[in-house]
Length: 424
Image 1 (cartoon, rainbow, N blue to C red):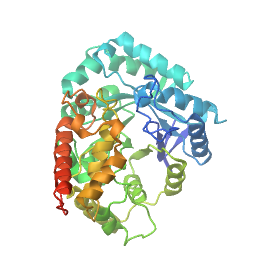
Image 2 (cartoon, one colour):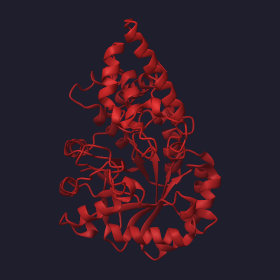
Image 3 (cartoon, one colour):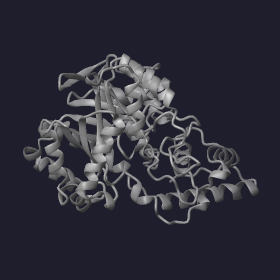
Image 4 (tube, rainbow, N blue to C red):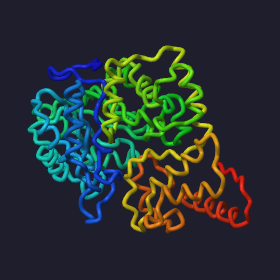
């Protein structure tokens, strides 16, 4: 397993485990609510235990979680898996976050309670890497309320002095003013690392994916110039760079017909020397084994391969996909819609080389989004989902567009006019 950085006497694996897309007993997303309305949808603890143990046995020792992941279940589940792995606490790195998203969590006492609960759930008396979660999401005003006005950032710095956390960092989402503030105050807070969204599409084209994002290259170089190590999230752009996509495959398959599209995306991220860890949400054991193989050791991309990946990025962008990373933060919908499934279906239609007929598309829609889960036409436009989306997608607007498209397909089938080709 490739390792570049060391912290507290531990070498840190270049591949890290992101504990958000955990294995479930029913195959659903771990951020979904179960029928009892309390816990996440059937997290498969035994399977998670197997995955965590396999990762540790093969040199992966970085585990990233949050109090907000999997409807509050992630930290506890990860703590159990690590405790049952048979590995000493000193052999792995735990990263978790101050995820005080709700205004009622802003007061410092609530932040302190969240930290203590993280320790309890993770079965540890210290956190290796503690992050201010989602800096920039909501702009500078929200950043100030969550971390500055309440004294939370200064308290986190004190935790580091007390060695209750070993390293202090932040994850960044979007607003440049908040990022600039953190860099401007680096001499004061001495950031030990920063977590950013980085992949070969966002490297040069972040604003083409989502107008609120900043290019990965600029973020990486700014952090590198300030000697701040980089942790990467969304290396697969929410899985979209791992699913077969003819436009991407046309560029990459000639260079290595046996390599998966996911492998290309991971190799890109691992090419850059100031990257400490590349996080991957590994739902299935197949993902675990493939990723371990890719990073054992990691082969950096050549200039020729980087050029091909840039062409692949441009080809991907030409398909105009919705920037949904399938994080499920928008769920549950109060009206029962499976929002990520609907957006994913639409994206997969756009990225297919051969567009199906109207009748075939409707059949595929019915299979992808069963009627009992409620489809796009049931969106009321309440917008409760919008503030929770890390990508700031206008979800009701996208659902309305999809609903209109589906209605057009239905009319086409009724009129027996096949051959519709819809684009965004």
